[in-house]
Amino acid sequence: MNDLPEVLDVEAAAAVDPGTSLLVSGPAMAGKSDVVRSILASGLRNGEGAVCVTTGGTTADVIADLEARVDDLVESHVAVVDCRERDSPDGDAAPEGAHVHHVGAPSDLTGIGIGITRSFERLHQCGVDRGYLSLDSLSTMLTYTDRKAVFKFCHVLSSRLDQAEFLGLFSVDTSAHDDRTVQVIKQAFDGMIEIRERDGDREARLRGVEPNPSDWVAV
Amino acid sequence: MSESDPPVVLIVEDEPDVAETYRLWLVEDYEVRTAENGDEGLDLLDEAVDVVLLDRMMPGLSGDEVLDRIRDEDLDCRIAMVTAVEPDFDILELGFDAYLSKPIKSDQLRETVRNLLERSEYDTLLQEYYAKVEKQATLEASKTRAELSDSEEYRRLTDNIDELRTELSDTLGGIEDDEDFIATIRGLGDVDGT
Image 1: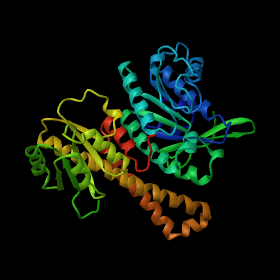
Image 2: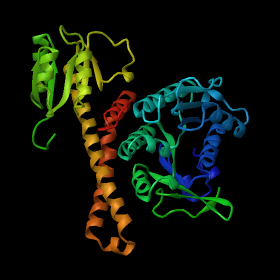
Image 3: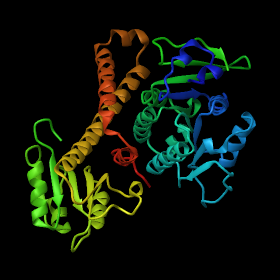
Image 4: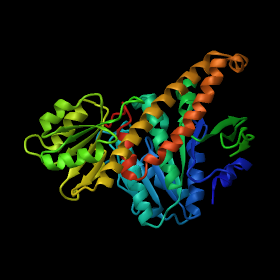
């Protein structure tokens, strides 16, 4: 089962295997996070799990957003790896039921890896063996860690996701980096979802899953 | 690690009989160095060493101390910690790449060494892949589409990248569990965990 076509209505979306890792790229404010969370929400409605690695939004925001999208959200199907840069490790109270793992900083790649591993363990204990992992965003990680390290991290993580049969969605803000950086980073992934705004409408297309990019469709 | 030389394994173990047993199990496939204590181990450690087999409980410098020194020196080797009992600690949080509980069987030891080397190979391939991808992106940024399709260099590079991609996904057999996953992230060259 694959929930991608519920959000991204192109033929190629149905061909995306669980365990695929996709780069979600687009300029600032294009709605990348919204698209990613819509996909996560579809998965949660279908009984799958969601692991949210956040470098910006608080744990409470992430959960509240998913609650607003999914009726009767099962909190124990959600895990958050919170790696926001902050002075003190408290900040927000962990919402009841969801699994939360705090990492000291977005540059702590090993810590993020451990958080993801713990998340899989906890979801597994709650009977969830499939789902989605979002990382929002790589752009923040790229400001703290050099491109090479982020690239390698993405590659290793996508192989872990492949094995776990979780579909990875990694956001990158194309207006925050030069073209070369995005060109390089995308090679760590199996494909990408490009997002743009045209005449006030949001559009997306899928690349890398089939030889040619899909058409642009409204999302 | 070059193609022709066998990989180098350093055994740091204070019981000579045990060290000799390990050596005999490994000597057919690897160049083996043995050290009787932590200080001697650090002396024998250089860029050529691929895998260190480190006894945790030793008189003098303990395995944990040796581990810290090795990590501080930023040497690109993989470390398997040998413990007398099942570890009661959270192995993911610590800085070594694998652990073995005594008594160790010959298959188990060889399997661990092979697995650690496979991870090093993955890292080397990933490094190469990244370098090629960077180069490709540079060419794409500086040339027109027409120039690229005429460029022999660009075609070779693209083929090369495809090959490496396949090779990398084959090597990923090295990531078999969470321990492997974390150790691989920790071992990513200049990736800094702080």
